[in-house]
Length: 385
Image 1 (cartoon, helix red, strand yellow):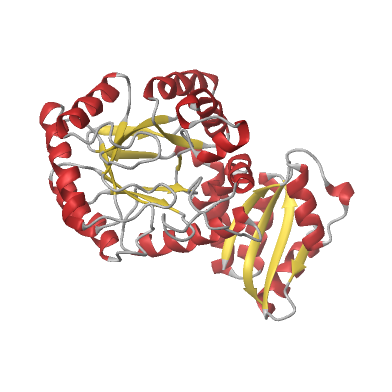
Image 2 (cartoon, helix red, strand yellow):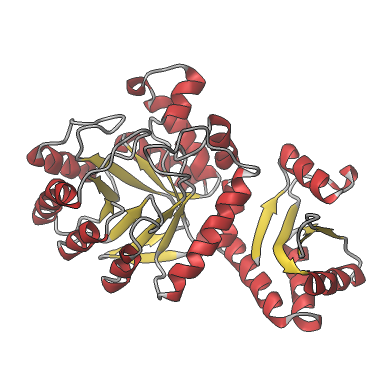
């Protein structure tokens, strides 16, 4: 069973759900929210629908012909969803009622969350900047630029001086079509840089962009605080155990396929729903281990078409009910280049515009190549909150 609060204010989103659930068009109004409960057993779906209907509200129900599982959806303001969830708690299934209320609490108090990472308190009533440091030969934007250890260390320190809250260090390119590298090579690229940055700035908050548990463990031993895993520990299940062992923070990202094949015609029936469901189920796995400092990243550009990326950016609010801060990376990515027909070295202004949109729609950390732009965006939008 999966729960999600959906913003139906976007007319194309309302149209999609109105077709699926046969909702009358005159129900539409700006600010309309919906609670969708997916994969309910038939008996529980019928009982829940009956409770909602008995309270004078409309409840829509849907099931594929080949399934005994039902999806149900009810609409209203956040207050309406809360009151109906309370009714389900008291008059129906208690466990479902508690889960519904938790989902609403996640959405309503999304901006109230805070994480202590190292000695720094991240209060997510505002947005923060993560600077990208690729210690690689073949990254799409800056491959080879900071491949030398000393260049990489100096660049990290410069980003911190320019206002970066976190430095994300990666030793293996994840650009479309990229080949993997060995654990040994990735360690040789990353670990000396981590040591050098922390030696010169002990309070640095360093994130490690890796899918390998051995790389993650060595980096955490040297003082890194966050693991940024584009593969959601599918490639190396030991990785999440390392995160737990060192009480690290964890960035959970969605990627369809692998960097080598992810852009080979990725296809979704509903990109937001499919990625939300993936993250929802992965979060349950992670929290069973007692890991609490989780960030979620829908994986812009990782196994998505141009239109998928824009749909995700437009509907970032629909990830709030997962209950964890959003981290988004759009910097210089190909969907910007394809949309505007501009080369990678001309994409910073457009990236800044999209990053501002992402923050406005709920993103709490922007992962960016241009730290100075990112800091300015965050300062402006944080003051508008």
